[in-house]
Length: 617
Image (cartoon, rainbow, N blue to C red; front, side, top):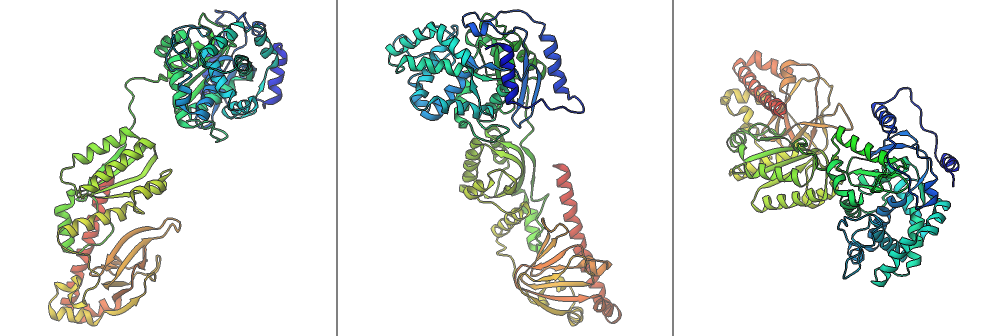
């Protein structure tokens, strides 16, 4: 097939390159590389495959694809070429995916050969080829796959990597079949060791996979699929399992560039595979892939211009797989104890004093980013250095993902702490991908505030204070406790009792704020519901607490809705009652004002503590 017809064939199957109102820097960079490196005229065309020797040597295409689906192109990026040896990692991946690493490992090794791609050298005793990137290993992989699936299924699988249906260039296939005597010799030698079955079937399959037609965009997306753990970044379909990708990229890193693999990894540092048609695929796991096409080859059988593109991109942008000195942001965004942050639960004086003394024994850790082995190891060191720890809150609301290793290690850390009687609470799991499985295995609170409240309760109970108060006599209520008997009686005469069932609305946000509520039974939640889809707890007031201090002191409108969490008894002092106290019982009125100021001071202190903790974080 001539170059012109090959170009026409690709243009029939792919849309025109999208036009934009301006150029982006990456496209400018690729255009610059294309213009400068296109002047390289070293190397030559492969002569042992006649159809490839007839290709236009000036063709040069570049494409870069990211794991989130962006594709950037320059030059002849939509010109078709055959995969040739770039097909080897794909067939190897299929063999691993279908048969498993153990079965494949009995027929194909994973060691660099140090020899050229078409070397006939095999392991002396077993006849097993060194790896799947040299021809002997690729023929063995083709034989394994041939025993499990027809070639149509292989072509579909290749299309899964590329994100579209692919075809075989029959002219190139026939050219290779007519001249591939060395590959036939390798196949027959493999057969003598029992590594493959029918050598003719294996070689026929190998020639056909090498002749699959792609362009640079296709190849870049194949690489991005590998970089993305086997999931195509545009279609979202899984081509192979993540553990298969790990094996394939490992072998590509050590063997993909044949007898030049060591120099490639040292200089470029990317798992890569080249083909004698002039294609090169390089992969940076988790980030991107680079694909190039230029048919002029160096002495190792690698594209001269394609290798130069990969080398320059790696050097200029630090893409080397083992680049030194780069550290990710700390997975620990903040770590504060309960002397610096408290829940919205209103506590009694005795509870507040206990928390002030014991708060250093409970730590709230806010995590962020990706949690893997290293991140959980840092968390482990932090909690081990915390001294006497009785409670721990792990806030995962800013965590982007938890990889399998991080999940396992986090589970072991939590289990170890709980075995040591540390009350561990996880929060923010609703925003973590697959957070439900973590909740199921480790448990979790609906919010950080509730998790902090639970840890406060743990410290309070361990201090011997007992369970939170659920009911108190009005005459013994802390709000009235410091009043004289006469003043207390005067205030009680102006309190109006009310009863609310669980779930009832006691006061609504935006209504007039004229009442002070003294809670004698049950539990009350003060909720900011200005955003109905995400109501936020402002406070939880138990029996023995009060709410509405700001409203009765300053008037205006309520800034939150108050709900009965349980059946609730309250006694209400409205503004008329307060005015009557001022007129008839000035001493009682002054005592009430003092209690109101004390409550407001506690609220201000709590808010100041929270702001300081946020600022420190």
